[in-house]
Image 1 (cartoon, rainbow, N blue to C red):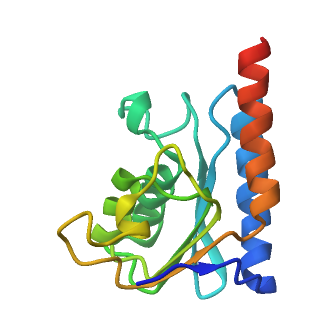
Image 2 (cartoon, one colour):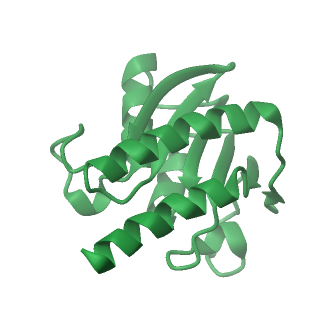
Length: 162
């Protein structure tokens, strides 16, 4: 499965804008600014952001990623363990842990903004690196990429200077 770079559909940009507002919220709380939401049939099912205080509170900070929070919340909201037919929108390319969770709950489409060169999900980039089948759904990368990269850069510049 290859990544479609910056598909740019208005639909994807609309939901990425919501994810960016969630990333801004994470930034204001001092967490790495990543926002994620689960969409089904054009409706937002659940949204989340990286946070040290938001549910699920019983997870260690190191695995409380925006994608994990969105998946857990969407499963609870829909009352099921699988998210077939759902899409996930996230401001940064999912890490390997989050990609595994996305696959386990059978999300059909991943849309992300910024490519994550420091925490590359090898399976998204090169399915030959990890001996499992590549993500079976659609992957769209680079949606509102400049905006998604800028918030990450602002956050880490503030951390370095502060």
